[in-house]
Length: 153
Image 1 (cartoon, rainbow, N blue to C red):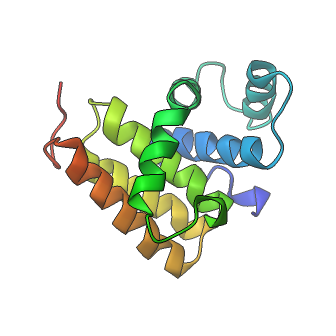
Image 2 (cartoon, rainbow, N blue to C red):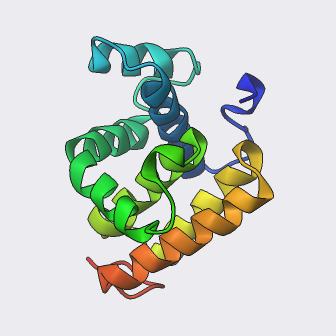
């Protein structure tokens, strides 16, 4: 991954937060830190934004890691014809992020979650990955039972 693409200043603050969460999840998957909270704050501090700017990224990472077992279980179900361990680490980080938002962030419509995941994947994944991500996240959205275009709160 190109470190210059961590945070595109033209992106909305919400997409910048999602991208920061994605990058940290990817990094965490490759090399799990001993002190997760300290590592997350060090990672975010390197992005040189005002304190508190990445509050949503922190919420996402905390929530994903709290629900990791159920998120990974659903991913495993949704990719039935694919071995979980063979999922590209970038794809896995985006799937975890997207599925968490679809299932647990009821303030964000699933269609927005999927669109954001696909936009982030444009900078970090292959064209084949985007098709894969779209299919898995779309199925997760259908299974969630949430209306696709509106918040559930």
